[in-house]
Amino acid sequence: MADVRPNVERPTTYTTVHEVLNSECESAFARYRKLTFADATFMRFALFELATIFLLPANGGVGLWLRKKLLRHFFGAFGRSAIIGRNCVFRHPNRIFLGDSVTVDDNCLLDARGCGSEGLHIGDHTIVSRGCTIKSKAGGIRIGRRVNIGGATQIISHSGIGIGDDVGIGGACQISGGTFAIQEFSKPPAQRTPVSNGPIEIGSGAWLATGVLVLDGVRIGEGSVISAGSVVTQAVGPRCVAQGIPAKKVFTLR
Amino acid sequence: MEERLKLLIAEILDLPVDDIAADMNRQRTPEWDSLNHLRLITACESEFDIALTMDEIAAIHTPQHLEMIIDSRSIGRG
Image 1 (cartoon, helix red, strand yellow):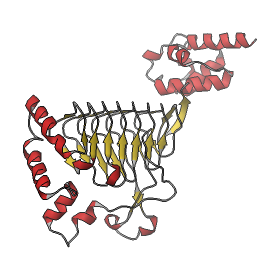
Image 2 (spheres, helix red, strand yellow; image 1 turned 90 degrees about the horizontal axis):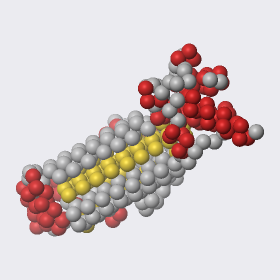
Image 3 (cartoon, chains in turn yellow, brown; image 1 turned 45 degrees about the vertical axis):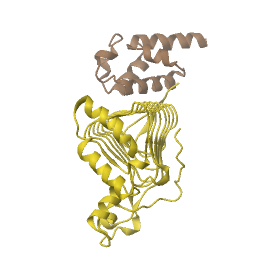
Image 4 (cartoon, helix red, strand yellow; image 1 turned 120 degrees about the vertical axis):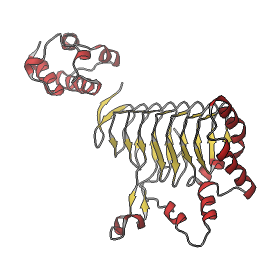
């Protein structure tokens, strides 16, 4: 199981992207840099910008080879034989740690803005299919080994996400969730303080079918199966089959 | 087929009782999907006080087969 500490007792709040973009004390360039590669020196930032312009859209095998050889220098870790597809977007790549033989297909977004020192880790042999978003607004993200993430899935951390080894995640799943502070309902939504009920943990060997929504503070046990279109609002035990909105256990695998 | 089992299958699959035949096949019955299969097994285990293995659960494709397993367990219990 990935190492993400539960924090269900005290909801977590964090800085929103709106607060960064609407900061009037900084120039547009400084705000852009803060959102894309805050920790880098100017030279490193400029080189990454060049790589973004010329390497990320490059076609064919040459494009794959160039990305593999040149992008690795910007990442926290870049395992052997990692494959990066076309037109991916990487924000704060120095906090992104890719294991060996990781595949990130075309048009994915990996954003480690809120990860801090915990980083965004993707384990060996994991496949991130086309059009996925893996993003941290707050808290680390740890994805285990041999995980298969279906196309157009969104994994968005509000206070940490841990996904174990050998997990299957279907297409168009949403592993996210979060709400606003209830005492601020008199404010417009964009001005309310976002709140999370804690990290999401998905145990090794679990399978989320297509279109599953997993809310914050939820733990899904090892080897469990969540049926297509379910909304998981509460913990699901190990080796359970759960279904529905909200997802309820219908069977225990034996 | 035993009436209790027939009623159970009809209730879980949301089909008229008259449509439940001993030889109806899981693969040719759209209502008998994987989740309803698990629901049916759970209901049978509770109703007939038996426990099936995952291999048995996976092998069941007709009410006849299910009934056969239930009967064998009941006989085994004496």
